[in-house]
Length: 296
Image (cartoon, rainbow, N blue to C red; front, side):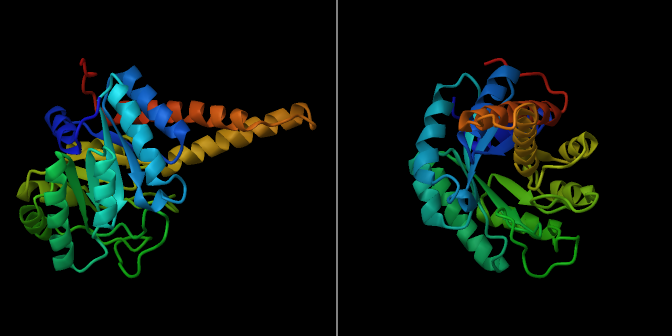
């Protein structure tokens, strides 16, 4: 069943857990996410990032995920990730998305507030939840690095807790993506998370928090972040990295056994799907933080 971003994060808030948010850049990822949610009985968020339009256009992925999620026995939120265009967001909502992450973090603060407020009104029309971002993780969802910043190796700028309170109050958002040491993409060194940023924000405003750049952390780091108020964790890069490695291993083994062997496309997609199921099952369970599975 489809559930809104607001509702699924409120459930996570009540259970002191986080919901895994995985990107839908392939049918294999979509299938894996739904199957894992049904098998584990934990909710999941399937996301389409605007930056992934070239990988899978919105006009195709929207109807596919909305239909499959509605038919599923699991609680599934369909979220638009890192949207920087309000017209694109409205198109997604028309296609059945139940959440929008509007990303105005690269804009001047007042402009971010203004557009995020418009996004909140739009999402309210559709009964969808709104996520917004404040601060910078130093790189964009598609991998480009932001200009400036000094907080970590990628130029991240930690979210200011006092500004976060003002931002939440003025925009009417449902959940807040904040910067506290994670980065998009692959880590070049050991991630160093500043949990005090999360604690200080939650001391000022009781809003569910979001971890972007959630791949590549230890289970302990996930659990500490959840205990500090993170209710949604975006997980993409390492999952597709592991799937790619599994495909490479499969091909290497087949070629080693028979240099003239045929490698078919379905060999690769099946292998990728199996790897994604394994990865998603692990992170969904870890992010549950000990919460009991859901009985619907």
